[in-house]
Amino acid sequence: MTGNGLRTFMLLAALTALFMGVGYLIGGPGGAMLALGLAAAMNVFAFWNADKLMLRMHGAREILPDERDPRLYQFASDTARMAEGAGMPVPRIYVIDNPQPNAFATGRDPNNAAVAATTGLLAQLNREEVMGVMAHELAHVRTRDTLTMTVTATIAGAIGFLANFALFFGGRERGGLIAALALAILAPIAASLVQMAISRAREYEADRIGAEICGNPQWLASALEKIERGARRTINPSAERNPATAHMFIINPLNGQGADNLFSTHPATANRIARLREMGGAAPTPPAGPWGHHGAWGGAMEDEDARGGRFGGPWG
Image (cartoon, rainbow, N blue to C red; front, side, top):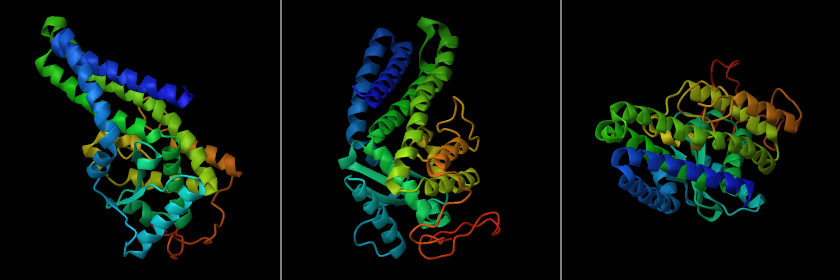
């Protein structure tokens, strides 16, 4: 078993054990076995359907070959060319009508994968930066992170639900209401810690591989700076409604802490940027790409601080 496969197995085993623990609190040994059965069923469901569920949760729309918006068509074409250049199957490409700049990848394997970007991302980043972000998402697809991340989101969300259920309906025969309350609080936290410990390492690796796919680590480094600023000041309603999916995004869509600690679903953005700068030779701004220092569809690239809080992008 590869290192990535071993980490995946340990992650799912830990989440399943937590799920069984909550089941035991609710219904004793029978409840634990029922929870095991439910966990197995959820894993099967997530394997086949979690990508569709994730895309539906966030209102994603697929960009088809007959897309009439030339900006979206160009975005999809750039992403497809990078996938082909990396020797990967071209994933389905989606856009999400959401002002927060962000993106994610999902799917059970490279042949059944999807990548999605928000309209906020396309509006606030230039073409090179968008390509850097999508290269990061393609890296998640190539390393098969997407299956683990989507299954984790499904089970972690269910653990939180069962823990709250246990608070009201279980525990009197096995430690009383205090035990039920403790598990209701600790089980979701423990599930999140297991999830985060692995997803943070995956983000660093996806940054590295993504820089190789797009050919310039500075594009992704610059993109992360802009996404961090934009995400911290813009609410993502669909992510707030579905917090168990937060680790799927390139930048945490839920909060602005950015601290590299146990309760962060992502590494500190500053740490990620520093690693990317080292890969490409430290530079304060990304070098000119094949389109020069311009926005994704011809608009001049604007700096937030120098141009009154605006970014350059296709709708910027």
